[in-house]
Length: 241
Image 1 (tube, rainbow, N blue to C red):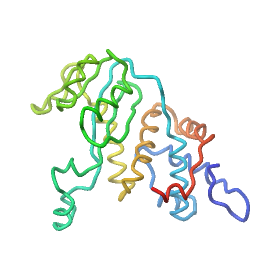
Image 2: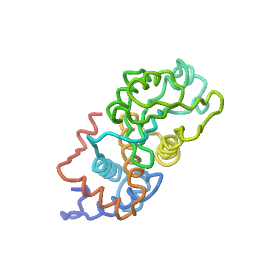
Image 3: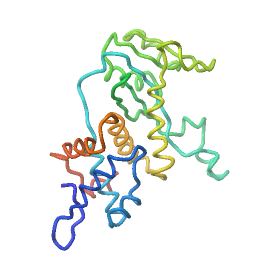
Image 4: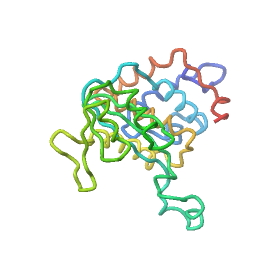
């Protein structure tokens, strides 16, 4: 059921417009805005959003077999916005070291896959890439040293941003960077103050929207509804996080 809000003992039908409102915008919708649109509390709207995002979560055993772009991004507050004392306590190294790391693999012209990684080691980054891209497929990355071993498995080529190189004929990661700009805008502009424990749900929503970007709002809503079956999310399980 996508209708956690009950009204006078009857099932509330606001779950359906909630799916539409979440699947429609490019940068997502906050639980506060959804609550105002549906006439429910922010807490109820937040729970509805989480359940719909779970329905949007998809997986595939099929690996990318063409041209893939791999890139990572960092999510966390800007140190310049912190109080000096807070900055000294929380920023113990470079900004990237104190942020959540996400890695993504984009099939050029197709879908993207993304997840959290604990660090930027070869085990973390290349492990994810190997799980999602077929052996001997073409892989484009930047010059980060972790990707050096990619040539053992893929047709690997790089762009050297140290020299302001962003495109070298067909070699670039612009598509992957374009995807990462979308959840970054969502986090900074639409859904601020995100608890890191719930961050993956926001990324799942943006992955779903990006992978179905060529469809209509109605099409994305239909796809989200098909993911409802056999998936159950309770308030108690969310409170455990």
